[in-house]
Length: 292
Length: 255
Image 1 (cartoon, rainbow over the protein chains, first blue to last red):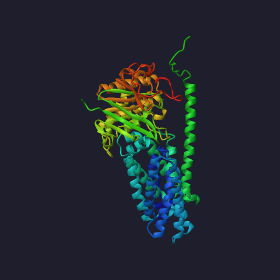
Image 2: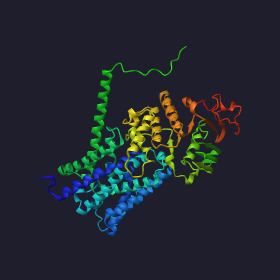
Image 3: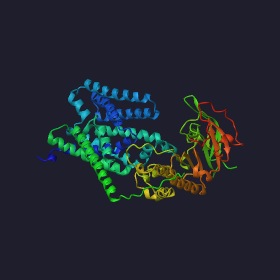
Image 4: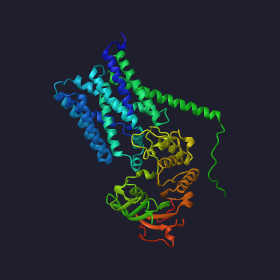
């Protein structure tokens, strides 16, 4: 029986494709600012949104977007202050978010641990037609921000002070990046789950930057790698009957290891060639000659 | 009399109650190249950061192009060159990508780049002699080349005023010369420059005026003092108390 004979399989693949493209496109800015783990924290906060949705009978994706957006803005305001106490404030927010979510889910009518697990670790095979439409709309919004505003988001992530002196709307851009991150988290919730979202935002970027020279190239390669890992992960998990979300993440990490080793090997070979090929490599003349 | 490009009046800056600048006044007129000199910890970098609104003023006033800082909006007229490129995060960026960020001040928000924007970036790269490294990752450049990248980034916005924080610190001789040449051309084109320096090196000939900051106050303003140490300068306005035992007693040029 072919992989695409089932509608649910096609929907799982499409959902994985959207997630694989969107997550690294916004994750690259987080990696650039050394905030790789922020996506993880926002995933924690989003669980409270899921709990509120299940408890009130609303679509959990919608409530998760709203709650995690509020959480992301709070995280950004704490980061902006740059105080040491901010670290503790973030911890409170993240662990409060996940605990709140678990408690709210257990209070709801759908309080099975299977339901909780599906939000924490993903359940792409249960993607409904409505889920897919919501993912496509939110994913398109994430991609639009990440791609169309790249020069501006690059500028604030690369050198925030310079961006400020240039008169760019730094604060608005920071908040936009935070909200877009929270939307990405909810888009990826179905495919890889809230606890593994951050991996798909960060790992493809880490892999891509081993072999690229520029920011734009890194972004496109990371999006390609994310998409390949997500689709391959669904296929492999179908064959091996493993958890899809975790399989996607393990494949992404395997890709990182392979590329890292290959890049290191390639550099070693190149160095060896240079050493053998041009023994008489020009040595820079000393700037000053001390004479006595 | 023309409006000064930078006008600082009685600026006071304090970090957590500790005063770093205690009533600094200085002006930069159009077309001037002014150097702010001083030992490490004298407050010279803080002065520049206060002028750029990167640190808040506790008291006093800064006017840029005649407009008080809180109301100033023409940031595109200012090209800022920080001390060093931000610590590398691992995500690579090419020299051209970094320099293009300096063009955003001129390019409309959310707009695609015009041919003019691309030319400005290419011209800025040529001005600092980095056109052949445009597609190289910034992290592979030498310290001097990285510094020139930051100057090109500031020039890409076609500013009227360049503000530079220690642009020549730790820069090799070749880059210092390329830097001095780029600065001369900028001034010849009608630009104004305010720079912070620890030592002037090849920049000395193009500096019109020096402002020496010592312990948060202006200790001297006028001609560039002789490296023998500004304390020996006959005309220098000796307004500060003698240095307490723990602070340096060397001149500004000793490391």
